[in-house]
Image 1: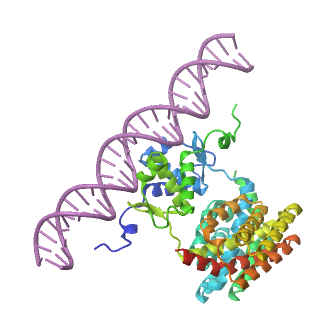
Image 2: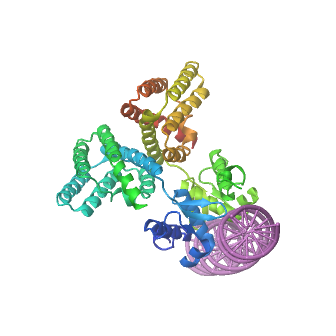
Image 3: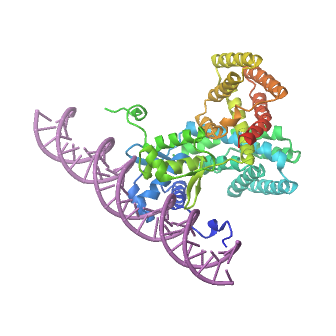
Length: 224
Length: 224
DNA sequence: CTTGCGCACTTGGAATTCATAATACAAAAT
DNA sequence: ATTTTGTATTATGAATTCCAAGTGCGCAAG
């Protein structure tokens, strides 16, 4: 009788999955600060669960790189060094270049139109000096291109990685020149996307994200 | 007295880490075939451990994508569809392109000489029709370029991903034309590496790996 | 001031228990 | 005979309890 896929709607997910998600939120929200130790008993009580699923969740987050395991001393929130951020930005640049390449081969006219609309709204926000809206639209454009790559594997890796630098990536303040350059690059990206020039869009995307590196690193340095 | 980092040498790693490693080997060796269910009790007894660390290991492998969790029915070895392999090859191509780009900026003359030596040995093996040696050297060249990128984050993602298609990737038999093309591309890669032409090497690398896609997919189709 | 001892706390792991979901199998009804 | 229903078995997800070992800390002795 059971239709399939009822799993997602009816039955609850794994407890350790929910715990992992709550833990991720705690970390991303900053409630659990980098380097802060995680007391299993304390957290288990806070979540109203036993240590078992919590420990499974900790192993998951450690695999994702959000927690570090200290032998016999539990786990602590992973702290990211500037060097690691540097590395991660290069990888993100590569992933987005790949997404750009694939998107050129698969994107629909409607999606391009949608991205173009986002782009124009972003330009408007920029001219009005509306940082918050600018950053949001900026992120949406990048995510739209990623989605247009139609590659779930790529998206999964991208999300896992960019989730760790998200806080700084889209909130980094630029100098007017940097800002102007970024806007120009976005302008060029839309053009290349419309002409579906995979090769050059990939190249530009890599450079575009590399161009943010200094800004992101500076912003990260501030926040720590 | 204990200096840090003795962890790796003196005290044994976490049990769940060792279990995870043994599980990975079982999967990669094919002893645990795709889609085969994993009986926790059976495996725990086989490893001589309790269910606790085994289940933590299972959660880790599930996060890595090597196992799939079936709610209330445990875990099974993840089976990869042709579509997923297609996706993974594109991502690997992107990662290797990124590695190529970075390598051009950081590689030493000694490393280039070493890669060139591998390349010549590979050519020799090719001319002698020595498939096994050819594949080994081919892989070593790609890994050497990845190492020359000096990006641990990139390498980590690459290893996690390529580990899942390794079995087919370097053992796929090519037609003479494909083989010839691959050798020519490798020849060009060494040239570009010597001239440290990041942009064109990245481009070529992406195309080079894409060129293997049909072969790998065909090889995977056979083995299943 | 340093050294050394001991104690409390936490973790990693094992073992046991329990509820529930899934599967197999047998019995009953049509 | 086929399908349906009900039951028994099994394995998982989670909790609980237990224990050994490692860490850190404090306190006392030298």
